[in-house]
Amino acid sequence: MLRLIQLCAALALFIPSVLVAQPAADPAVQVDRVEAAYENLAYDEAEALARSALARFEVFSPDQLVRLHTALALVLYAKGEELEAAVQFRAALALNPDLRLDPLLVSPVTLAFYDDTKAAFIRQRNTQDNPDQSIRYVQILDDRPAATWRSVALPGWGQRHKGENTKGWLLTAGWAATLGGAVAAHFQRQDARDAYLGETDPTLVSDRYDTYNTWHRVRGGLLIGAAAIWAYAATDALVTRGPQSSLQISPTPTGFSVGWQF
Image 1: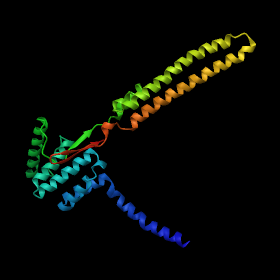
Image 2 (image 1 turned 90 degrees about the vertical axis):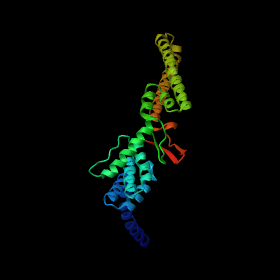
Image 3 (image 1 turned 45 degrees about the vertical axis):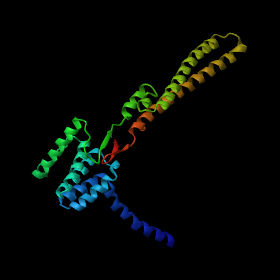
Image 4 (image 1 turned 180 degrees about the vertical axis):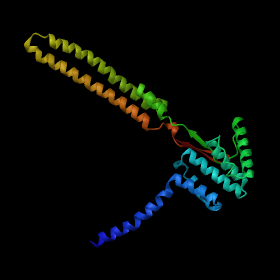
């Protein structure tokens, strides 16, 4: 009884702490905290929060990452770190080239600096020159919707679209084999049925029926197999990403680039 009371007391102390800490772990809450710290001129706090959040960039949506990089850029520019601020602005522009700053919330000097950074970023992008930055996001579109309708139309086609060629061909071959076998079994069933219905020898009626029933079961089993392969191919295409949708990390002259999936 005493141990039960001690356990309940421990849970009573632990649960509130979890409930209090849980909102801070929410990506949207983290972004709001960074922006609130910047608006309150708590630049050191805003920078620390932003860098901590960006260290786990994979949990944020593209829009949230844009907000984090933008807030960090504004903080760094306010602290006189213009080069690093430009890096953060370019990281935000890599995700949203149409990003605009609100002139009611940003000073004219900061807005002019951002406009110059954006113009340089666009020139470099249009001339295919790599901007001098240490953070670069490569957005990889989700290949699952296109793969799904392909596998619905032909099992395995969607897997090949995602780059899973071996799996794709195995699914196509398995589905074609079972469906083709079902068609062949159907004709055998029809012949066996006609033979059964047309049999006049009482001693052979039972054998004719058994043959008909066997082909009937074979056809049903093959149809179920073909349907199962079709369902698996469509579900697999919808749920799993292809190899080209995995996270990519590659070196750059000034740091690293990351591929972000969504």
